[in-house]
Image 1 (cartoon, rainbow, N blue to C red):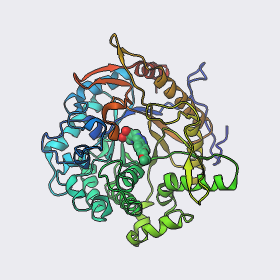
Image 2: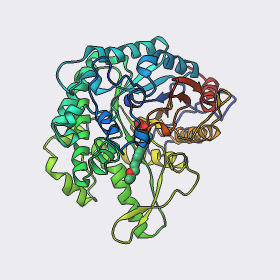
Image 3: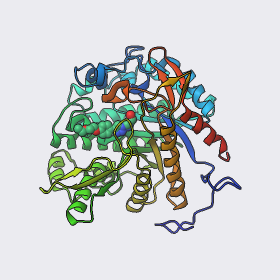
Image 4: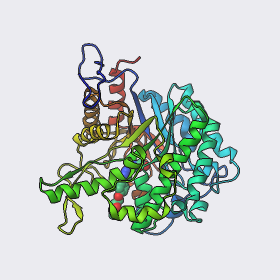
Length: 458
Ligand code: JJW
């Protein structure tokens, strides 16, 4: 089969005699987590305050007033959690490093005790034959930097570069994949645009300043990475969602294009084309004051891969006044209220590949929340299994179409702190009893385990 966009020939992969399992031998299967969502130990070994510590303590911001103080206590139970991953048979583990464990005030001297936790974790993973994949910024900005203006300030990008460079030096090639930022749209818009996430500010125009400084932080970290000549890979993770027009009308198509500009292109274009989308004049006017010469050269520096987090799609229509609105979900939904739409994963990655070039892609998050219950020591979650199965099937189709998809990380290894929803949205393939810290591999986790067993391993 021929690739849909480039002249490379696609090899036929898979297990002999079984055409349902059709993945390259070196395809990376993993699970993903993030520091604030699982670690707990919020006040141990010199960890500084993060914006999520502050935000979760602000009344009304997080469901039930939950915080990440204890979470899954992964800081102390990491060996047990790595053993679970070994049992599942994953190739790679995507975790994040908490900036305030490394620099309690965001900058200055490294807090060695905080860094040592990640060195122990990486060592444990390597010992068990699991590749470490580390995200440098998964939303837990040191509060001390937020007090100076956070992502609204250009200096924060410089501090991030220093922190990133230190992690590249300290952990280097022991981490096989480095991800600079997780979902900058969420950090910028939910954090500074609508205030649903930390630090809870709400000003539409200035959220684009935050987005620009986040992209700059990525570019500066990338520059620091290249100077070290490491052998591992570096990239960035975006949360992308295809935006479908509700009808064929020109108005609805324009509405979908706008929604796509806001959700997807505002990040993809600067990273892969070197400037913001030119069809978004209000956005361009808002961001103009913080753009400096040379910024786009940094932001569009070559990455080794793009990470994509995919959960759902939107269907949008014109609101009749030049704006747009999303229709209610058109099919079954998860506990988040997000429509289950596996086809969207296929459409999205084909589009990214066609529009932004032949860059290696990873699905760095995909998964679903459902309200699980323990029954006689078991967790039966057929809907989550079905969700994963359907999305894995789209991954097969993508590879067959010649899209350079290199890996797939299930969100999440563990039930954890789901941001503004606290512990009330369970994404894990492993159940966590937050009273006792007991872990139970859910049926979906068992299904993933047998899926991985069925693959031909190099
Ligand atoms: C949008 C809130 C409108 C996480 C959103 C809220 C609505 C008033 C899952 N991805 O826990 C998107 N997740 O940490 C990273 N992805 O809008 C990892 N996207 O405001 C997972 C939340 C999300 C969201 C949550």
